Length: 92
Image (tube, rainbow, N blue to C red):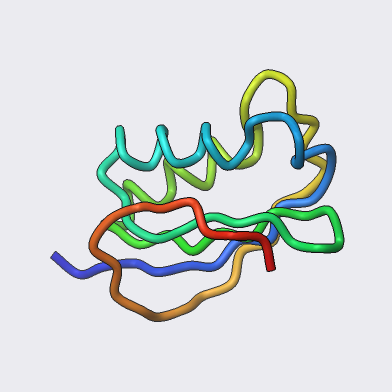
């Protein structure tokens, strides 16, 4: 199956609310690969890889996030890369 790879920039109240941890759990549940990390500007950045359906479902989840988050916007960019699991990376 062809793999879809996208990079997300997630803005709003998304740091300090369990966003990254929750995304890791949701990505693993869906079978996506990639990573998620906090950015110094207060946003969260994520790289998602998987089938088109899996990536679409994870983008849909990212627009809501965990209960304590208040997502203002999610920017989606086509990307490339190969990943073997989904990980939480250090802040950049």
